Length: 192
Image (cartoon, rainbow, N blue to C red; front, side):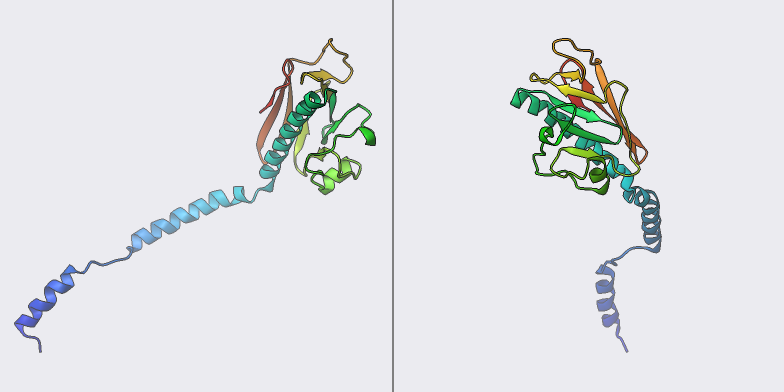
């Protein structure tokens, strides 16, 4: 049996303790928000096409910039050959084995599509578009070169006469997001 003094002693101590935890409403709201985020974000997270398209676009920009810098550094033309399914760098338009540009990393990606499009050669700066990625090259710009000053010319042009357009746009799309790589005609500047 508790006395009046015992009740007074137990009362303030239990009132001083704060309850910790979440209410049922808070837990339900968190579950609903988490479910909505999972429904919207998860399909985009697992779409490989958008990652492949971005990666291939970045790879194309890197290869084009490398071609320009290599032409300047070696004081000779570097040809860029685009055929709608691959990009390749060579020192001449024939792109024979002796005139292929070697990749700075020692080899290309070695993917099945790359090996098929690049003649099973891994020690060559040549890359093919991944599956489900569309690659569009404007007419007349499928083969061009950077001269020793880094300026682009059509493969049939002889310096100083240039018929290279003011700007060439290379389109890469996949995963619902189109990307455009631009090569400026006057300077050879490569950008998105």
